[in-house]
Image (spheres, rainbow, N blue to C red):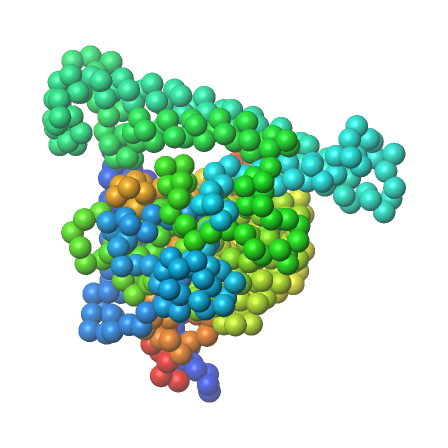
Length: 550
């Protein structure tokens, strides 16, 4: 068992008053010695720092103390992501239904431009029902666009008017190689892990047969030497993480596809959709199959479970709220999203009644950023909250050389929306490793943090797994926002954002950040985002209740 030290102080609820409103401010600064638990549980993100000594969002406390006898309104959350398993056992009944559309009559009954869009739309498909599995990285699109102008040219050869485009081209060349190396390394690691999974599986299958996946039985096994001790540790690790032969084979196939398709300039996924990706007016593409390719594309299902997995059944996991209806909008495949798809999906969500948009994905380059910015403004103008992930590259997004899209912070100066939230990922214990090691951060660009490590959620075909990353933290924030909208529908999207950022929990801890040169620096966690906080459902609902009375 490992031990660590962290400080624990509580500045209870402080009420600061002025002539207009009474605001609740909650700061919790931690300082006790606690024995680190081996297994904190897959629902640790629902826990409370004071009651459970886990840096969760105090959701269970909120339900027990604040929402017990209250009835909430339905909130529609658009999930802009990959395709989603709408038939998952723990998500049945959680999906938005377009009541203005008659199913399967091949007619656009509501005249919204999308035929038979019963649950949402797939912007990566065609009328034949074919959907994209692999898409190019944005750097490949950049290279394809500018190759005829800049191939084998030096800066001395370039017209000054084209210098910015040439520099972008050069960055894309370098980035392509970095991505290639990263994908190759991940593929190799997955192959090694697959071998370990197979060894552990074979060993315990030979001992326990059909009971070999029972955790209690594996824990009771007494190793006879170092080899069997390692097999036991591996088996328990794989059981806990839901790591299987099939999952690793899918991961390996995914990396192979990224190498042979997503990184290949000769491959172009828009031959499947049949549209012009550089014409925002060309909207006649896609299909209504939001649940295709689930073996290859699980991410939308993963996000959906965090938001609204059934809280009242005895299977699987529990989501943030049962008052959420999910609107799946597929724009993501293996590779990078198209700006056109992002922009049109945002507009679809707004036009079809979404209260909140969750987009747990992003990219480092954006060829048509203006289209997305216009759509983000459109969402803000129509009182729709947009929640997106900060990304998982361990980068400071406030520096000029690091960007992440979509973003409402133009040139690190001007915000184009007052209802846009970018989310970073935190861990379960407020110590030097409180920042999830891969999470991006930035005082100007990232708004707030949320738990993003070891979260159990849904994946396709009635299965479950643990998940990490800012894409996990994002639906936690969107889910808490949906709670506020459900119980306090009078608040605008901008007001909900303000409540979330003001009411989060402050942790006065120094965290370690690995820099690009491999060295480590220590910074206050509070300096890694605008709010400096971790979202907290209990505090947000307390503040909303107080503000609703003024």
